Length: 132
Image (tube, rainbow, N blue to C red; front, side, top):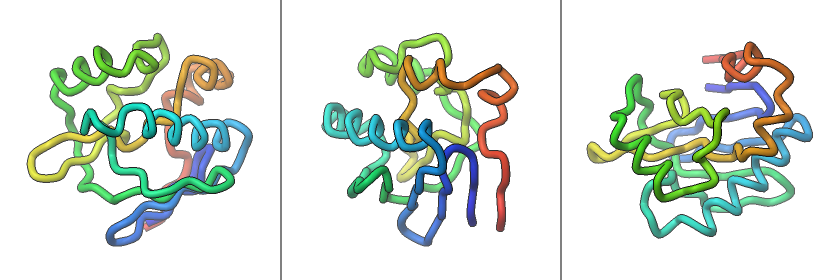
């Protein structure tokens, strides 16, 4: 499956590759690496294997349609960078599951990057195209 927004996301059986398509996508990838390095021991984030020139390789998780509010509140309380107005922790597409645990799998947005979205429609739309 392929998803396209600010990054081209290719879902392979065990990994996910994210390629930046814009400055925002590049900044999201760089921020994702920073957040991973800072908070990987919390076990709240999907495993990031590597980042190179804005390209991300992550572990693939099972998708979910709902997120327990307790998981969202836990992430916001531990990862202060996500306690911002336009943080999309409530979007189930940004979460994955494994062994009945929830992991945040799209965590590249910070306050500055959230201000680069020009309007709420663009912010709420998420992935523009999805190809199976």
